[in-house]
Amino acid sequence: GNVYVFDHPLIQHKLTFIRDKNTGTKEFRELVDEVAALMAYEITRDMPLREVEVETPVAKAKCKVLEGKKLGLVPILRAGLGMVDGILKLIPAAKVGHLGLYRDPETLEPVQYYSKMPSDIGERELIVIDPMLATGGSASAGIRILKEMGAKQIKLMCLIAAPEGVERVQKDHPDVDIYVAAVDEKLDEKSYIIPGLGDAGDRLFG
Ligand code: PRP
Image 1 (cartoon, helix red, strand yellow):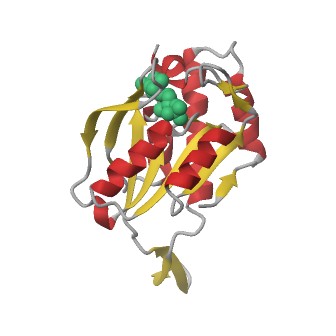
Image 2 (cartoon, helix red, strand yellow):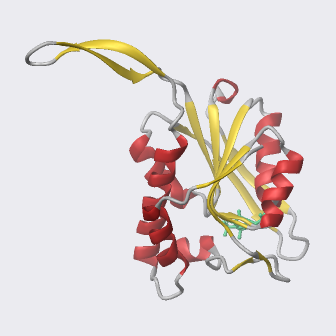
């Protein structure tokens, strides 16, 4: 799949303060929420429209509304939750499926502990959400699980990716496009993204 890096100035500006270790929890949450909304604005650029007619106070106008394509957001718990509200502000009709995965600290393998999806995920375009794409193990497993449940159209939205994670998802799921605010330099020996932002789940929820 393709990789789209959202280099909009507002996204880059806010991402800088998300990375800063001196940014406290309240501000961190607000910034993640705002960047998620800005990314949703960019990711919905190709949403299909249909024509309608409305009457303005002075004349008839041919206008457009969204065709009503069904969307689903799938945050990977916990950190993905931090981006959900921001996206829902722009796409309030989206359904939300929750997928619990944690990275085993020893093996780094993703372990599934929760899943609750809307019943019609096969008919929805799904956006998998996770602030961090490190080794790509979690995202890749999450996408595989959704495909096993019948999902057909999947996009991946992350704040920060490591090149390794991008490569992993592209290899495992060539049909999935990846949307990120930044691709960082590398992973360290503990598979943290460098320079990254630290542990997104901890910075959001403690
Ligand atoms: C972090 C992050 C991703 C995953 C990325 O979650 O939010 O889900 O690690 O790493 P990977 O690409 O190498 O799989 P973590 O497992 O720390 O769980 P949390 O969100 O509950 O803190």
